[in-house]
Image 1 (cartoon, rainbow, N blue to C red):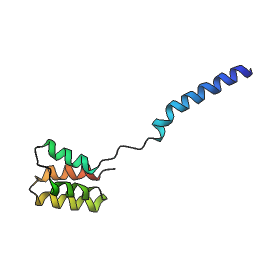
Image 2 (image 1 turned 60 degrees about the vertical axis):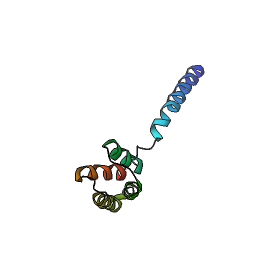
Image 3 (image 1 turned 45 degrees about the vertical axis):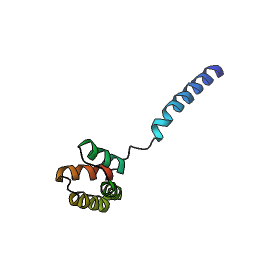
Image 4 (image 1 turned 120 degrees about the vertical axis):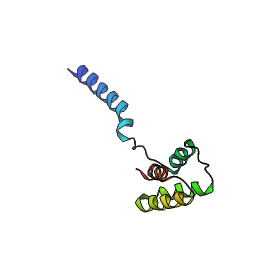
Length: 91
């Protein structure tokens, strides 16, 4: 009986060791880089103004609103602005 217990214990430990990285991994988080890449992929030039706006977007709801206003001022289309700032702000 002791040998069977050890085998079951080792199997459980092995399974837990394999599952642990999945269980403790943090969820994917968007960044300013996601905002910038989104706009770059749409053909916008990503300069200092866009980088600054996307950086602002990482600051939660208030930052997302600041990102939105800045990108609109830079001439980014409304729908593109909304999605880009969402990309920066979502968590």
